[in-house]
Length: 225
Image (cartoon, rainbow, N blue to C red; front, side, top):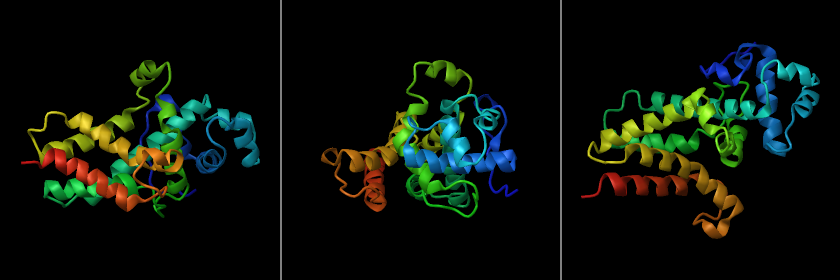
């Protein structure tokens, strides 16, 4: 079994952590591929089992429902982004340079990596852009939050907020700016793809221009005279 990088995700999301078994890793790989292909609404455990030449029952041994599975893979992605920010800023002491690197990783975490053998980050990023909000825009969001479903998302936001505070300790809204920058990295791709009239970017993944816009927004707020 190829383990690669693994993350500690809240146990309330799963019955059996798929990262720890060969079947579970195949489940994650095929989930990302199938959900990216047909979308969350059309995705079912039966279709997933058929794709894996397995059974629906086997999938249910890992997850109670597809909402928890969606939340799980989204949390895996947030942990991946957090990890990349940490390793790329490890020996960087200049807060403004750390901010620059952080913004870059928010976007370019979507590139495939050999460190994660059973997850296609590019496809997973597509899912996060299109489907990610469906994990917490639900009627039971407060209950899910109490169960720790979104700890990975909140941890990443706290990391971004801490970088913002290092750049400008007097900025009064670090948490709100953090979630804004994080959302911008995905929303701008979404709108360029589906609502181009609402976007300044006419190409779906014009990451360099989106990165420039996010950096402009952050520095205008944090480094103004």
